Length: 237
Ligand SMILES: Nc1ncnc2c1ncn2[C@@H]1O[C@H](COP(=O)(O)OP(=O)(O)OP(=O)(O)O)[C@@H](O)[C@H]1O
Image 1 (tube, rainbow, N blue to C red):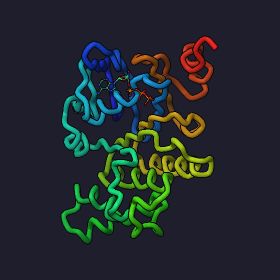
Image 2: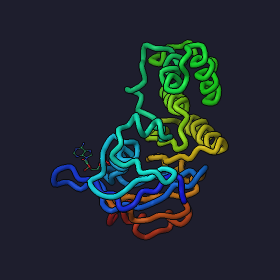
Image 3: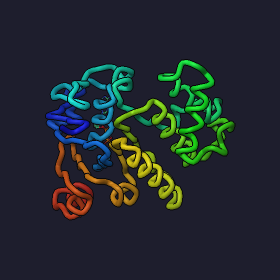
Image 4: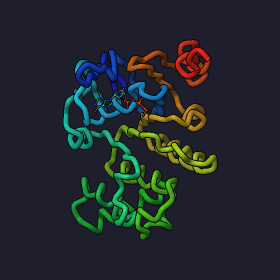
C-alpha cells in the first residue's frame, strides 16, 4: 500500500472539468513531481488532496484511510501538510512566529512551540533570520519559510506548490537541497512545479497532467522522452 493513493479523481466546476479520472500513488519517502502545461489541473488536484476541494468523483487515501472531502484541518491532522504561496505568510510576523503558528497545532506551551519552530527554521537554513519580519525576506527565503511552516505541522506527506518559481539558479539549488532533506526525514513530497530543471533531477516519479487528464507517469527520463508529454508542452510547434 502506498502512502497516498489517488484513484479515479475527477473535479468539475460547473461545466468545466479541471481533473478527469486521475490515478496515481506516492510511496513513503518518495518525491513525486506533478507537472503539466498551464491550466492542466495541477493546482486543482493538489487542492483535492489537501482538502480544499472535494473531488466530484474518485477516492483519495492516506495510509489506507479515506481523506477525500475532509476539511483541510482534518487532512492536516492526519498528516497532509502543504505550503502556501507567499501572500499567505503573515508578513508582519517574524519568521519564527510564522512557524510557531503551525507548531501550535501540536505544542500547547509557547516555549515548546518556539523551540519546535527554531528547529524547523534551522532545517530550512533560516536560523539567522528567525527574528526578521517575514515581509522583509527575499522570495527565496519566504518560500523556505513556507516549507518550514508546513513541516511544523508534522506531515507524513508534504504538498509543495511551485516553491521554485521565480528563483535564480543558486536559489533553486537551495530549494532542491531542502526537498532532498525532507525525503531523508522519511516525509513524502508531492511537488507541483513549473521549474522542470529543479524537480526532474530529484523526483522518484513524475506524473504529467494535460487538460485535466493524466497523460504520462514514470521516471523523469521516461516522461521526458514520452511523445504525448513532448506534444503537450510544445504543441504542434
Ligand atoms: N475554483 C475554480 N472555479 C472554476 N474553475 C476553476 C477553479 N479552479 C480552477 N479552475 C479551472 O480549472 C482548470 C485547471 O486549473 P488549475 O489551476 O488546476 O491548473 P494548473 O495546472 O494548476 O494551472 P497553472 O499551471 O496555470 O497554475 C482551469 O481551466 C481553471 O480555469
